[in-house]
Image (cartoon, rainbow, N blue to C red):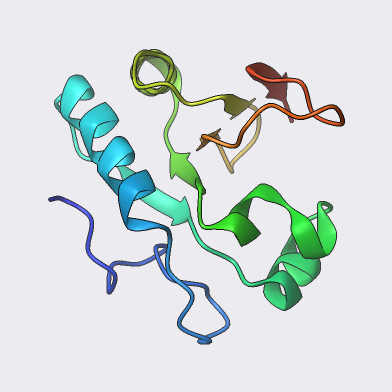
Length: 123
């Protein structure tokens, strides 16, 4: 596996020790294998308190579930990451390709009445 709990961006940045779900990271690994290039993780797991500090999704955003990841990528590689995530069954994909902080967000949260999935958005 290319992703370790000690890698930058995997565990919650506040130091609480929260990690992404193992089966989710196996899905991330399969998607990464499809692209055949290294992925730079900006953020994966975030506890509710930390997420509220860094995200507009507050205490219960996707990263608080342990089933979301942001990959720092741009251009053609961003398209490859997006395609790989779709092929591996990610249900939420967000794309930010403007400015200095470019990334692709992926999660595999379930469909719900409040949040129809699969879904795609831009930042």
